[in-house]
Structure formats: C-alpha cells, structure tokens
Length: 73
Image (cartoon, rainbow, N blue to C red; front, top):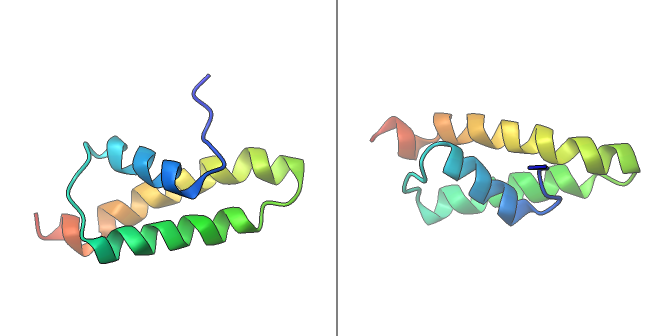
C-alpha cells in the first residue's frame, strides 16, 4: 500500500516527485514544508491522521503547480 506518510518533508518530496521533481527555490520549499507541517499539526484524532496526509499531499501538488517556480519554467 502506498499510504501517504504523516511526515511533512516526505509529503513535499512525494508531491514534487508527482511533477517529475522540478527545481524549486529554497523559499518555495520552505513554504511548502511550512504548509504541510501546519496542516498535519492539526491531525490529532485517528481519522485525521489517516486522511490529512492524503489531503495535504494533494494540496501540495496544486501549490507546486501554481508556484512561481513552475510558472516561469
């Protein structure tokens, strides 16, 4: 099973891999990590720990696609 991990850094890595590992700036990477950590930080109950990583990874994919780094490449 390819379950999304409850780990912000790994989710960012997976979301970047979805897009073929594009080069993003350090500032973009920090913003993505901060978003993921904030989103996962509210996952206190079991169901949230199961669902939030999936939702967060999907949101990260969208944020990466809309990031200035991909808009200029």
